[in-house]
Length: 319
Image 1 (cartoon, rainbow, N blue to C red):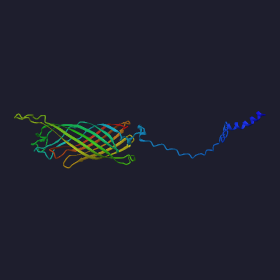
Image 2: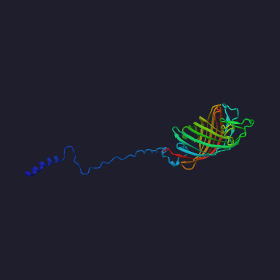
Image 3: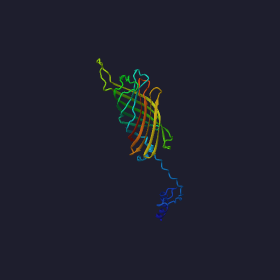
Image 4: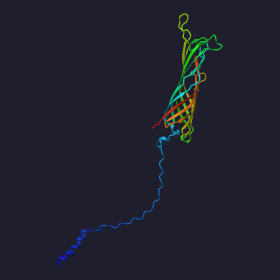
C-alpha cells in the first residue's frame, strides 16, 4: 500500500519536469500546413534586346558608310598631259622677249596620299604629286627675229637649238570637314568643306648645247639657264561623296585660291572607288590643275595639267 501511494504522488512531478509550462508537447511529425493556392501573376512583357553597338557589327559587313572612319594610304599612277609656258613678268628687265612654249611630253607620275580620320567626322589628307617634262625645239620668237629671247638672265639668239626640261612638284595638306548631312547616317550623299595648304614648285633648265661656251676674247659664255618659281597658298573648296552601290563610291572635289596680278591656282578631282576586298580598293579617276606663278616677278610659269590616274587604296581599321 505504501509503495502504491508513493507511485501515485510521484507521477505529477515527473510530468511537470518533462514538459515546461506554456510549451505544448512536440510531436515527431508536425502536421503540414497547406499553403494558399498561388495566383498566376500577370506575365511580364518580354525584355527587348539591347541595340547592337558599332563594335558589335561584323567586320565583314562594314560598307561605304563606315570606310571614311579608317586610316588609309593610296598610291596611284598618272598619265600627265599639258605643257607649261614661261613668260616675262612685270619685273622683266631685258629688252629681248621671254616667252617659251615647252614641247615634248611629260613623264608619268606616281603620286601618294594618306588620310587620317579626325574628330567630328573630319579627315586630314596629305598628298604628294610630282612629274618631269622635257623637249627640244628651235627658238622662234616670231617678229622679234633679230632680237632673240632671254630666260633667267641668259640670252639666246633667234634660231638657237634649245634642249629644255622642267620639274613640277606639289605637296598638299587638306582638312576635310563633313558639312552635310546631319545626322550623318540620314542620307548617303555627303558634302565636305575643304581647307587646304598647298606648296607648288616648278623649275626649269634650258640649254643651248650647240652654242659656243667662250667668246672671241676668251670670256666664258653662259649657255645654260635655270630657275624656278614657288606658290605657297591656302585653298578653299568643296568635295561631294556618294556611294553608288555597296561596292562602288563616287567622289568629286574642287579647290583653289589666287590674287589678281599675282599667283593663282585651282584643281579638281573626280574618281570612283571599287571595293576589291574589305581593306583594299581600286581607284580610277582624273585630276585637272591650273597654276600661274606671280606675274609681278621677272618671269612666271603658267600651265594646265590633265592627269587621268589609276591606283590602289588600302584601309587600316582604327581598332
